[in-house]
Length: 244
Image (cartoon, rainbow, N blue to C red; front, side, top):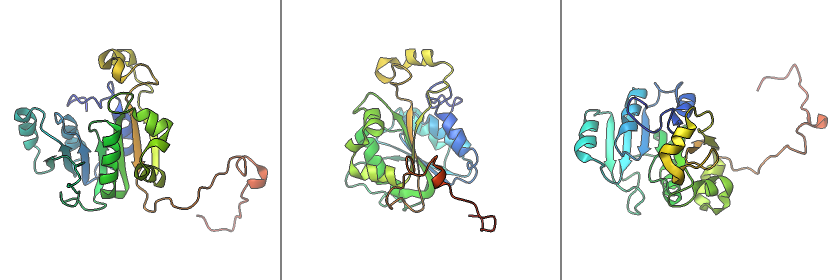
């Protein structure tokens, strides 16, 4: 990412730390990665090199510097596909754009960063993700059109029910990539107080969802204050039992 001057880089948002953890072992088997938000095409360039066997799809509502960005990405065809369309419009469907259910390995939302768009993209595109695939929302922040931290993290009951259904039925985690940032004070100076104020209030949070083959539907099972750390709750091993 640093080579292509993306702010996903180690000394910017530090998203590459997470991406290396979850993608390094699968980078050669990924065949489809989709990113919402082309902007200047920098992360598209990086994904093109990092996933050598993948088609890279980028979505945006318009070109930003068409005479440079569009022409530059043309050199990465046929594996790079750009789509200038507002996915959130009611008359736009993923099937109408040629995307089948469970056809994508990785989906990254690096779009407008507003809560309304993050919910809208998730609800519309998540069905296209393969079981076992990753859906990642970047830049969950404290500014913009709605405070993503206060909703996604602090009080998800205020999210739309369709959003909560996805988050709760699949393996969802909250990631803070600011931990271990080696130039945090300099980063704060550059992004300013609107987007980041300290190690708690900033926009380098991410949501990572791994799609389950079988979404969680059964009633919750909680062991704390029941059988966890309770001798009476220990499952005794049978040496003759078959391994799980």
